[in-house]
Amino acid sequence: MPLIELNQVHKNYLEGVPSGVSGIDLTINAGEFITIIGESGSGKTTLLKLIYGYLVPQRGEVLFEGEKIKGPTEKLIPGHDEMKMVTQELTLNLYAKVFDNIASQLSNTDLLAKSQLTLQTMEFLRIDHLAEKKIVELSGGEQQRVAIAKAVITEPKVLLLDEPFSQIDSVLKKQLRDDIERLSKFLKITIIMVSHDPTDGLALSDQLLIVKDGKILRQGKPQDLYTNPKFAYVAKILGRANLVKNLSFLPQQNITYAIYPHQIKIKKEETFLSAMVKSIHFSGAYQEVEIVVEGKIILVHDHQYLPLKTSDMVYFEVEGMQELIG
Image (cartoon, rainbow, N blue to C red; front, top):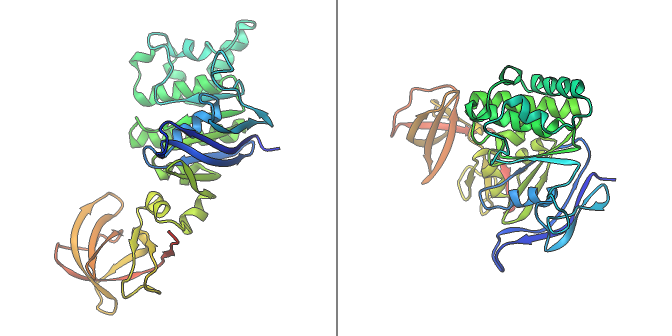
């Protein structure tokens, strides 16, 4: 039996306008890491809240281990007892210590065991050195770790994360991403994460859900969706793909293709296709180069750091592309 099932679930806030989710069918198995990706307003957070039991579907049903999940109209404290959710509005006691925030989730029947488990959880998430600090004294990344520790200390079957990396810098993001991955494997917990950044989902997930206008546009393994996006929306959101059509080098005309910036190589030799450099920007591991090809601006990630200037004539080859159906 699947752990979680959604059957034709609808929840819209405005009639006649995509403002939530519509017709969602979804199956999630125990131990899976699922990432829901979509633009702002696509319905991804609504979907997360429906799974948790914060919202009640207008139509359809949400099941946990075959039983209907009770919503806020049927339950005094909203949220399923076997799940924990960490939102962007962290539910922490700002003026209590880190240790006390996390330990508050455990009963006082065995104080020694309570203390040991709290310390173990903090150590796992690399916040044991913060035990005596108050939440208000912590950075955003540290607070996020405390919120996750508070959520998982009771060992729920499902952990739901709403944009867990949105308020932290890139260095802390990498550390927290590693910790969440370790958490998933160590506790064998099912994790459902909402993110606007596709790199989070590509790196961590067993399955990606690409949501647009309240519907699941694509679902599958990260590599499968990246290499075969099928839709322009998916190609753009997963890899900033160039969407091109009716250019002379394409296999077929009147068909749209997605070409990721790394699939284009700029050359100096005149044996390749020609283009003009429109702009060059430093981006760390590569330089972002915009080239104009037959009147179309195409983004290239140049890892060679070729000495280019605006208006230079260059040559390029395409090492891969994906045919789109919409």
